[in-house]
Image 1 (cartoon, one colour):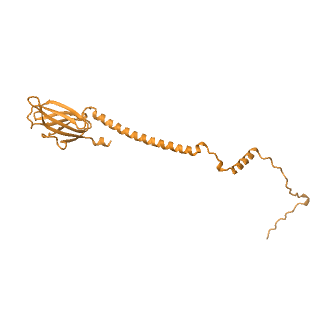
Image 2 (spheres, helix red, strand yellow):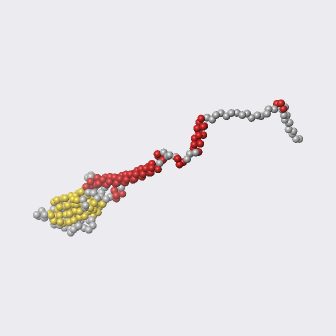
Image 3 (cartoon, helix red, strand yellow):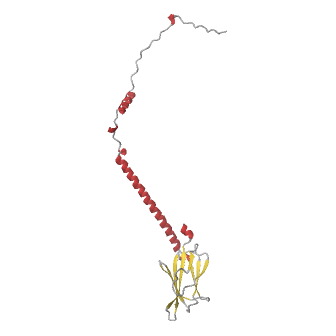
Length: 223
């Protein structure tokens, strides 16, 4: 069975109300809105050619700022280079102070060096590494080939000057001249020893030459 829709009864004619459009007056615009509209109108009519930039937006200020930045970069580079040189000089001074400061030894090392009886050798007669920590170096220099009772030893450092002079030293029972030297008193470099014998009249006669090279430790070189 089909359901029947219930009929809707319309109200009587005298009950109906006809719609009418009321004319309502709008309130006056606020002052802020008027100013905003005026500003937008001014922006619309704005001509970019008439714009006057601020002082920090001018080309001269930008160029000056770039020049100042470049000068600061150059000064920073110069300062870094100077600091690197100062650090290198400080390391050199530290090593020099360590070399020139006489320190206590903790061991004894014996070295036997045969001198050249004719002249200086073309190459060092012995090369040793500078001891660190310091050692007491006992140098044994055989002079049995020379018929003298007393000798003189002069030690010079190449490119520096005279280091030590020993006069009237007698050899031991093995005909060796024995010197005990603190290694901290002798830094790296080449040392040349000149041996002379005393005659009966007190004159000196050359009897031997020794070239000793003291090399820089590898650890100090890599530091």
